Length: 340
Image (cartoon, rainbow, N blue to C red; front, top):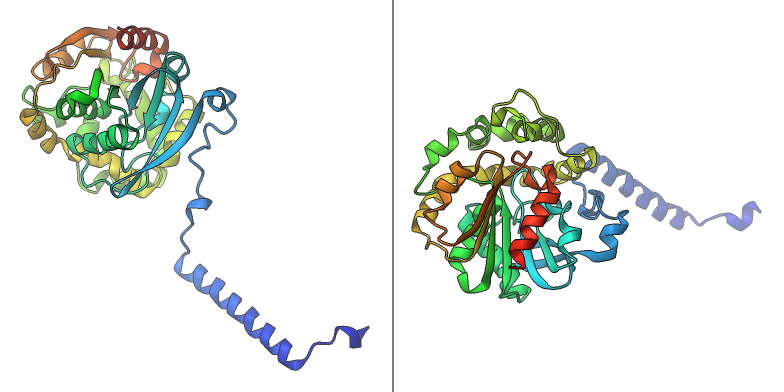
């Protein structure tokens, strides 16, 4: 038996060298710190892979737009509706209302360039530039020339720029809860509206503070601008987000480039003001939704640039997170507007 398995000296030498090389490679990787591959990171399907409601109607998709691989979720039948998220969220912020919308429309919920599961960095994080990326995806890659464009937070500013730059490709505009940087409010005044706007606008500082525990920061931030929270004169508010929702948003914002990209949305405020002032007022039919008690203040910033606001209403019992805090009301208003 021993004779049967005996190897030649030459073969033993070859295998010994191969084993030594493997050990050296592993040692070097450990010493310098190996970089995890994309496959090692939690998947873009993590929040939806075990959800039968998602699997029944929706699919994750990607499309190349210039130097960015943009991620979006598609589902439903009917006229197209494009949903654009703000900070610190992703396409998943729209999930509470997407199944109902998909009964009447083909829904496209996108991850903005540089954010969520979109891969690569855009040429700028100003909202006019992000609108051009979105238009290339929606109108050129997907061929949608009659889209209803709906945005929340900074996504609302992107939606406005989309309608302003590409009115012939915009059927309707939904603008959700954002003072529009522009002629009614300059960048310095905008940064003074809240501690978080001033903080996020700083170079490198928010990354240095937040990077060690992004999830904890997000979990603490969401109640700040929820109904009854400090942003609206209250002392405390419960988060409208579930632990699973926070996990999903933290999954993407924990990536250093995505975290920095989110803060770049704030650092672009000076350019956003200039771009809004330079933009053509849009006559696209518009739905304006705001947090409870904020309608007049926000409408004052958008009126100079939106000339056909068909309906403007604040959402009862909702702070900034309109979709999460009162999804039934938002769905009803949105469907009435989109089908109008």
